[in-house]
Image (cartoon, rainbow, N blue to C red):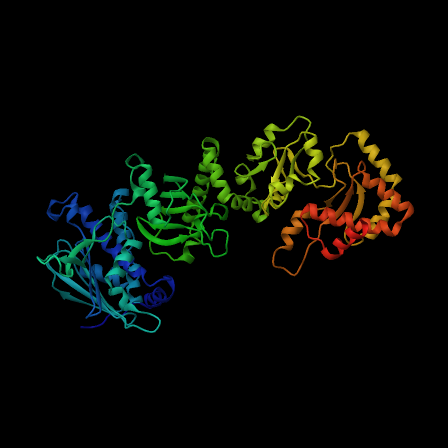
Length: 629
């Protein structure tokens, strides 16, 4: 019996298959089960027009047997089987697709899909086996044949015995090593878990004889309970995926229970989306928005992604490429017949069909969120409190590349009713004479409401958006405007709220006190860019504002990050011309310039505290208060 050699390119591909294409060795079982399903599909398809097949759909099955003593794992099916020539063509030449040819020749529709291809996936068996045998008898043939190989050295094909059509694949497992325990693949629990993980939705039953335990009945009620093991053939897979059922067949409980079981959550999701898409991208999807953010969601450890299936067979547990970062909170799965089962993570990243599906999913998620915002405000606000920061990051990320996608989904608490509002709602309430969308930043709403800078804006009757998340101002700076209305911080150097008369009055007072302001600025050199009279203050004596691109809040956020480089906003100390402190400063300028410097330090530190910024020397500040008192 002569050993036949694989072609040179097949040897290289086999070596790559074992060491490179598949990241996890455990997928070998998925591949062999999928091949068995393909074989059954072919015979089932034939039975629809050929009464001689003699098998109904319920007669088809895949069987798994594990023999710990012989260290063999066997996967068998009663499908169409292979002739000697087909064994040669399909298994002798790696990556030759018998399934693909069958699918093309018979023009199969969605109800009769072939999952993968008998070729590339089959050779994943050599990741765990030192020898593989395939005994197969083709439907309608009198002879069976045995294909046998120990890997890259080659293979043999000999005549064999088999009663009925179908294929039996036997894997002789590699010896255990310190790094790999191949004998785990003979354990009942391991096989059950792998079938559940990868092949739960194969549409033919996957059966295995499993050992179970039951209590032995006795007449002695006081005796210790005794148990005995027994063997029972069990179907390991559920066969029909929920996402392939018609929506009319399913209730909310069906979707919610599937979510809790599949994604290990004890609460119902806030929203589910059952998508059946045809066209450029053909796929089924089940998407969920959780009611609560996972404990690690806003950490580096969180891994986004949807489960990716090809005709009910799991390809990847978390396919990150299916979701943009700003929708990373979505959980769920996608099942597409357009994706090859035999595809690696690296190949998926460049798959054109995957990108089309991802774009379609992004549109679906955005539309559903928009509907929720419009029709189910209460739940949308619950969602936004959990995941709104992620949407704001999406606005800011990539220099605002996705701002137009997200701008109508983000919300902020407003001074109008102290509750969440959208930008569209804010603009719709703006007064005719209002030029800007005003906002204020701070660590909390209570803190913002105490800011001196909000006084004038509120006095004018204008609404203020409260920014309490670190990303808020960064996102708004990237957004720049909503509609034709620009954003303006209440701490900006020019609010443009004064009448011409008021502006002239302030200008005159500043000119009269120019030397005073220069002296104050000299005392605070390196701390403020300048000192000026304020038109925004009503009751407070002073406040800190900023000039330029970096605001005070942005300074706080950026400097809280782990970096050796610190940024500093161009600070401006504003003094209320109508407050008694202004008259006091003028008096000190005329009579006690040394004491004026101490007042400058005191007022500057006071303004920092109001703004929520740290003061450089708390002890010196406390002593200064006592001295001036």
